[in-house]
Every structure is written in C-alpha cells, then in structure tokens.
Image 1 (cartoon, rainbow, N blue to C red):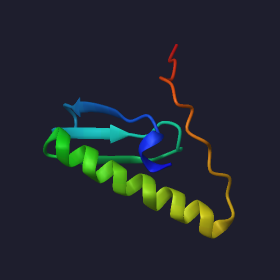
Image 2: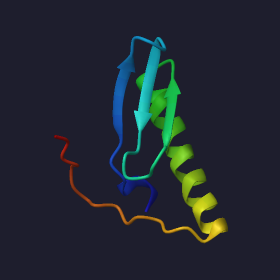
Image 3: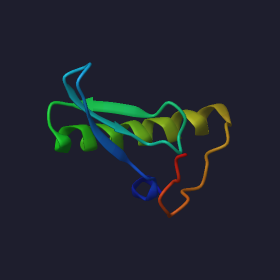
Length: 71
C-alpha cells in the first residue's frame, strides 16, 4: 500500500529545501536537501503515518490510484 499513494514533490523557497507531500494522508509531509532525499523521507513518513493510524484505530484511506484534482 505504501508506494501507491500520490506524492507531490516541490521546492520551497521559504524553507530552502525540497518538500514531499502525501496529500491523501492528512499532514503527511517530509523534506530533504535533494528531491531523492525528500522522496525517501516521505516514504518513511507514509509508513509512520499508517503505523500510527493502525495503533490508534484510525481510518487509513485507500490509495486512489490516480492523480488528485486541485481546484
């Protein structure tokens, strides 16, 4: 399930680093000095998010398997 969540990767001028977000998992962000580092870190964050939700009995959204639409 981990790799099926959409990940958005972008450069943050304010933070001077790359940010990776898993928008389907509320608040799931990570950062890194390179795109590769941010991607590695967000994959770890996704797993931690899922582990924590499981521990507390929270609902874990199923990956949509398609690109999210932003308006």
